[in-house]
Image 1 (cartoon, rainbow, N blue to C red):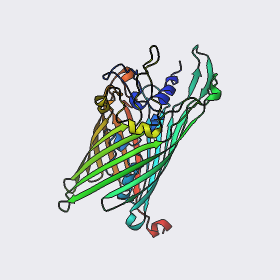
Image 2 (tube, helix red, strand yellow):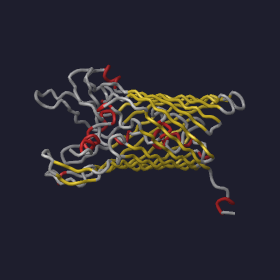
Image 3 (spheres, rainbow, N blue to C red):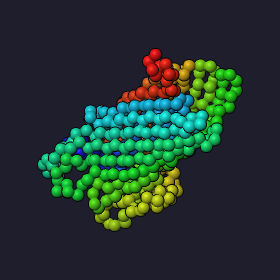
Image 4 (cartoon, rainbow, N blue to C red):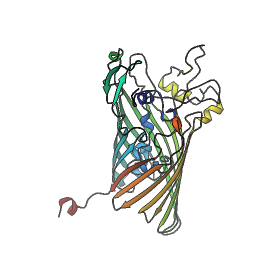
Length: 396
């Protein structure tokens, strides 16, 4: 079997949390991962947050707020910002799977209290060779997925802001497939939206010392189901995220941030079909709204299983002179819901308008339990700047 063939099923049928687990629903303590299509939408594309255990909902904003919480952007210190990130995927196994992300924003309005933003996320699954059960070639393909966002956000008060992003998603996984079902296979398309809120307040202690508390909440990927054939439509990874962050400026040179994010997928939990001899992997057929509302109480194991569906990220960031940053974080997911548990480390260097962030996911697990980003470096380039002066813009 070609090395990439299994990755197609992975991207179609599982979230990142379920990427290597066998589903079993015989009891509340057994593995029962929640599955969706287009799981690349939940891969963190930001090396700064990637170094903090994937904390990003309420920490200070930059151009990558378009992914984490678009409502943060009106509180950016600069008027314009652009970011680009490259993330290798399954680097230890294959060399040609990767995620690229580009985002940007611009503030405007009275006292720059509004912002428009956009981003492009592109996931390449490399080159594959399709085969049948006997190993006969059915064609070759280049599966690709991408999403494009447009966002708007504004301050409602000195401390509160809201934001909305609209998203188009396209997933072409079976391009080039020449099997008997080729005529019924097509690229999937979906539309979704993010809705975020952000609150931040700073207490000045003296000229150099201050305390800042921030809170964020975001509903992401709320949208239509996606279909690759005429007989099945799958949920996309609709998610509820809550985040808090506390930043303490110790003196003129030193600043520390601690953040916590909690996330939960708002899609149906798989259930036992109840049919002897049939597959136990069964996702209830529900509408998008019904699936979201029911996701808080549909786990077969009851309330205890519902609690296990929450993912927790905790991270810390230290800045020296606003030029050098050191980061660390930890991500936790219950063993019955994907079993992702990993430690992350990160560094940042800021020079004028330019910031370079790097993140490293410490290797953990082995075999099928190994995280796809284990032993992987991610890098982000961030540019934050205000308007050019007239003499600079004219070249004088």
